[in-house]
Length: 281
Image (cartoon, rainbow, N blue to C red):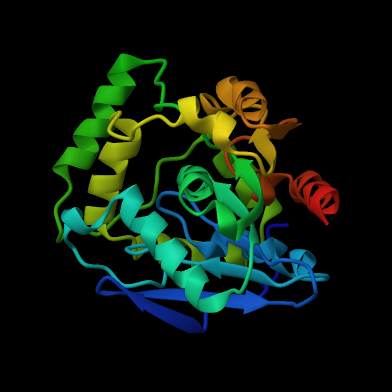
C-alpha cells in the first residue's frame, strides 16, 4: 500500500500537566470500558492511526502523545523526561477524562508504562495488552552496538534536530504496508521529538537505568495479552516469561513481524487485539 492518502486522526485536544501541553483525542463510543493506546519511545499516537477506525467500531478509543513526543510540547530539559513522569501524566489524564476502569494497550516503552500503571493504579485497570515490550532490562546481544547507541544518546544536545532513524529490516515492510500520506506525517512527527527526551529516555531504556519489574508480575491479576513480533529481539525472547509471569496471561506471536506489527501485519494484529477484548468484554 505505497500510495493513497492516510486516514486523518490528528489529535485535536490537549491536557496540561507538569508544564507540558499533551495532545490527545478520542473516537467511537459504547458501553464497554474504553481502550487506551500508549505509544512507545520516539513514537506518537500516529503509530496507531491506521487502526483506530477499526478499533473504534464498538468502543471508545483514546490516544495521547507523551511529553516531548509528536504533537505534545517539548521542554528541552532532560530532567523532565522519565518513565515515571510519563506514568504520572497518563494517570492524571485518565483521571480527568475517563470514569471507571480502562483496557490499556502499551507498545514498547508504552508497555513499560502500562506495567507500572497496573502496579500503581490497579483500580483504574480492567485489562492490559503488552505489545513488543519487557519487564526486564533491555538485553543487547552485541556489546559494541550497546556502546554505540548509548554514545549517540549521550552526544545529543537541546539544539539538535532529530534525524530520520536508521533503516532496519522492518523499514521496507512498513513502506510496503502503509500509505504515503501516513509515512509523510510520521516523518514530520518524528522530527518534532525533543532531543532531550531522546537523551534521557534512551539512556534509561537502553542503558539499564529502568528498574526491572519482573518480580512484581505476579501482583498483576487482570487479564493480559502479550503481543510480539516473531523477529523482535530481544523482546520476543522474554515474551513467554512475561505472559507466564502475570496471573492471567496469554501470548500471541505474529509471524514475520518485528517491532510494529500493527503497521506491517495489521490483520493479524487486529485479530489479536479483538480476541483480547472479546475475552474481557
